[in-house]
Image (cartoon, rainbow, N blue to C red):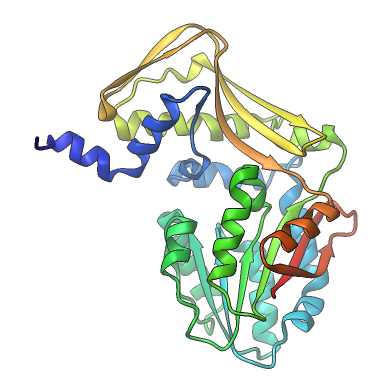
Length: 324
């Protein structure tokens, strides 16, 4: 039996496929990697500038105060390729890139991100602000890109996974992701991961439920994207943003909750999805770690922790690992 054009397109469209899987599951969920269309990119830039969202400032402080120590650890004497997974706008990383340039380090920069839009902006800005930087952007899903990347162009690779993006993985996926990175590195290569640390639960919850409602708009924007790209009819006013934090697991989970019983039709997947009143859609997890958990995660995935680089308040750690 031949497929219709619509069926063929749906099979080929990752957004349609994942929306169908997520919204026909129980409990319902959507995938945070789809937050980042052009509007989502802009909203996340606003989130990073919020007073409540301490993570960006804390990691920037790590880079500003620990850049010399980082270069000592990874060694600037030999050529290396710096591969940044989930590069975003690259503003924090720019501190390190400029410092490495000033120290006459021979390296190339390969930013990787799911959003082609954000990579185009990043490349344009970097070429203007650091003209001598060798930059090779690559758009795609982390796992797909890791499968394609061949770390053969340089004698050494230093991979970055910053901004607490590691916290967006559920427990059953984080080790799989890190093993994938490990398998694409050679013995002696480095991986630096940004970990948001466990702290006052009130401080954490405010970071995901800001007073200006930007994080709410960021989450709701995914429903708007589904409306625009998949022909859905979500009424955004009928969903409530609801983050919750569990200090025992360290997981801050974000939900969109249907405020009434309703049905949403999604044309591209030919589905009508029923919502009970107060039924949630799980949107995202952001796990916070203790230093002991960082050590255990490294050991379980084929790395050793070389050093944790902290901000002055120990809110955040950029943990430098080496492949063993």
